[in-house]
Image (cartoon, rainbow, N blue to C red; front, side, top):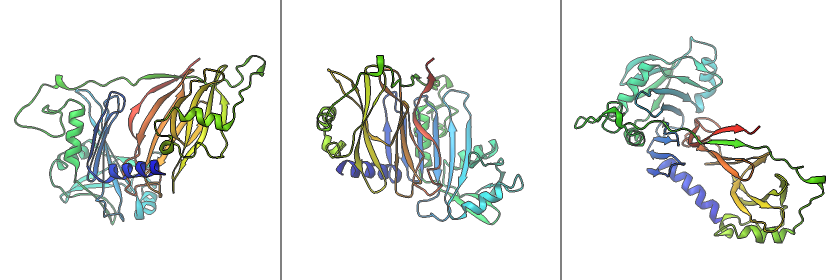
Length: 360
């Protein structure tokens, strides 16, 4: 289980320490600093999420600020509350417009949010609230979200660092639309990067009966399959320690010549992962590893969903779809920091998105 220990320690580090990664074109930009994080996807849309201080678990809260790429992009804001006051407060907000969250910054009232959305589980901030909040986050500020007698404190620690990272990712540093303004130089907004289009993927539904007469069968011993798949990994003992155990292989046809093979790879206290390979049904088998972290497969769609900790308040997810010859990554992202906002995580923070179309 060395592999799993490494995975969990990395997730924890991203959630609690200062982590910065700038990627190649298809994995986005991420930075976590104290109680704030920014995640920019491959279209250059940046999402900034802030939380309560880590030692204030009784009143969890999170703000999400979203800014797309481009010179004229505006900033949208949402708020979610959670934890001990979650059920009673959300019950009040679901009653209607009479119960809304108010924003206070340094004891000044900036009014109520828009109505709570039961579907989204959040309330949208007004334009004036977003403007005031962005200004407050560039310096030390006391930020509170208030509903009747309950007060949630939003931390400002780390906000400036992630705002600057978002400015860098979108080419806004030194421009008038930057989160962090600089008086020493003002660049033209023509320097701001434009949005990028999401890659287009065509999903092809597998055809398990696409063999003439349905007589073509694949037969191989488990030990032979394990030996074949082991060659696709640099360190099989770490990546898939269960590869050679006696748990069954799951082999299904994708089309007239290709198969999907699955086998349990690893298990931890609250996560598990399976290996998924695409192979030809006859020599040369040419096995291709998709992932050793899969948690589900259904009709051409693979998902790898892993909790950041046992209570499941933060999750990472990667999806792949079948495009006719191979599985292609269609989505990658997380739900934010492990801060007790809600089961399954607070937000959808993708680093990679695609435009999936179904092949006719």
